[in-house]
Each structure stands twice: as structure tokens, then as C-alpha cells.
Image (cartoon, rainbow, N blue to C red; front, side, top):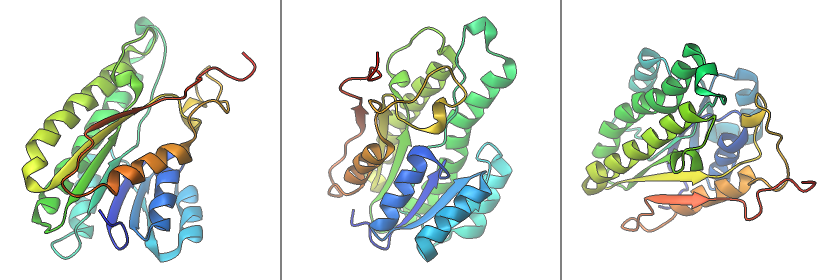
Length: 238
């Protein structure tokens, strides 16, 4: 896909990997609708990017809000070419210590919110004469289960299954579906955990470059799954 002039939707756009992907896309000449709940951060990105960035204050777990926004913004003459489902949340702890609220929030953000937006974007993409691409940001936690992340594991394993089924469902509609499984990325994701970010983690800019590579592959060339990890994941002082 040639990215200049294309239209992209990116969730979780206010920080971390989402912010880096928005910047990389804008530098390529893409028109980006960045979705998040942090108005201040989105407006700051708008100041940097100018007219190619459209800040959207939206909670993707609100199905009615997602439906209303897509219906209002997009139509046959304004079809998104790219959807990057990046927003995610994780709570870590023993299964008996994860609250019902935390479980529900992970399910709503990491699975339901992706479904709400994807189900509205797909009919539009099917109308396009050009190739479209949906990229879902999962985690290595969608490949291997580990203690104290059972809820997060469940959502990311679910996202892998959703992505694989969607790829097979949409491949003949000229819509690519890819899922990325990053290892630890130095983002605010870990701010509310006992895990400290460090320089040996993946850098969001490098993961964003990988996303750009996926998007720029030839139209009949699909990388359906890709895993990216730090070569040495240990903190420098460990």
C-alpha cells in the first residue's frame, strides 16, 4: 500500500505505541484519525501534525458511541483504508486477586472494543476499490500463558483467534488482516504495575516501523502474524 493520502484509524493514539504509529503514518502523508480518551494528549499531537491528524475523543468500549462516530464520519466518499486496533489494558495478579471490574475492563477494551470498531469499518472497506488493512496489536501474552496474567492472556489469545478468523473471512474482499505479538515495549502500559520500563525493552518507534513495513507490502502479499521481541529482555542493571 502506498500510504500518502490514505485514511487510517488508530486507537490508543494518545501515548506509547499508538502515538508512535500516528506520527510515522503522518510522516508518510497519511490522514490519521487518532482515538483516545486523553483530550490534552491528542490536541498536542494535532499541534505537531497539523491537518493530517484528526483527534477523536472516544471510548471504544461504548458501542453506541463507536457506531455513531463511524456513521457520522465515514461514507462511500470517505472510506478508511487502515484500521489499527492498538488500545489495550492489563491487570496483573493471582486469579483470586483480579477483581470483577478489572476482568470486565480487560474484556471490554481488549476484545469488545476491537469488535465494535472492526464490525463498522469492514462494510466500508468492502466498498473500496483499493486494498485495505486491519492490524491488531496483541502481545506475546497471546501466544504463551504465564502465571498472574491469566485475564490478560485470555484477551490476547482471544484477539489472536479473532484475527485469524477475520483474515480468512476477508482475504477475498481485498482486506488484509495482520496481528502483531510484541514483547515488552517501553510505554506507559507498565506504569500501574510492578514492572519498571528500561532501555532493553522494545522501543515504540521501532515497533511502529514494523507496522509501517506491514502496511507498505504489495497488495497481494500478506504477513498475517508477526512476533517481535527484545533480543535481550533483561534490564541493563540486572
